[in-house]
Structure formats: structure tokens, C-alpha cells
Length: 124
Image (cartoon, rainbow, N blue to C red; front, side, top):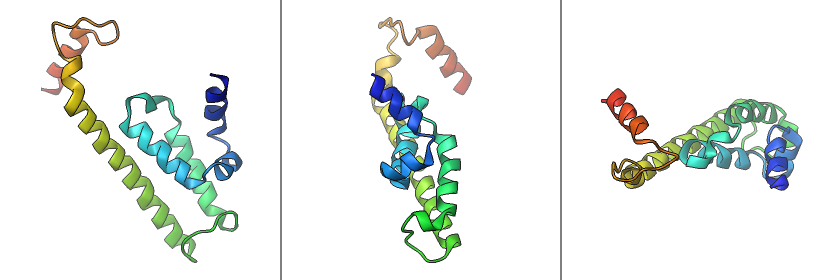
């Protein structure tokens, strides 16, 4: 458990990010944060700011393009695609397995039926 907490605390350190997978790690974290249920605790917004700092330091990373503007547009596109793909996966998961949580006969301690009904009423 301590190692998980240690990894999460390192997610806002640009040097650690570059040593552990670089901007591809940020892409994975954005996907998990937007698409999977347990990703809500990951620091996606600060990571985008840190990614901008990493992209601005062009000599630290082998960028695919010579122009810094081209590199910025390239990584922005990848970040957007990672988040959109995560949203599609999250929607698919909710569409496929959401009925398990909305079953009125099933009483759970985590998902209360009154909260599910209130959310349904709000969105209708």
C-alpha cells in the first residue's frame, strides 16, 4: 500500500514522470482518469500543466518534430484522444453494466437506490 501512495505522490514530479515513461505515462493516466471507475483520484489536471512544462523543455525529450509548435499540437492531439477514448470506454462500461447498480431489488451500501433514482430524475 505504501508503494501505491508513493507512486501517486510522485505523479506531480516532472523528473520522475520523465524517468518512468514520460508523456506516454500521462496519456495512460488521462485515459484511466476519464474512463475507469477507480481513476477519479488521479491528478489529471496538474499532469496537463506539468506536461506543458515538459514539452516546453524541448532539449529534455526526443520530440517527433523539429518545431516546438508542431510538437505542442501533436501532444495536445494525443491528450485529447486519450481523454475522449477514456470517455467512450466509461460510457460503454456504464451502458453494459449499469443495470447491475440500478436494480431496485438489490440493496447496496455503496449505491443507494434513492440516489440512483434522484440522478435518473435529474437527467430526465
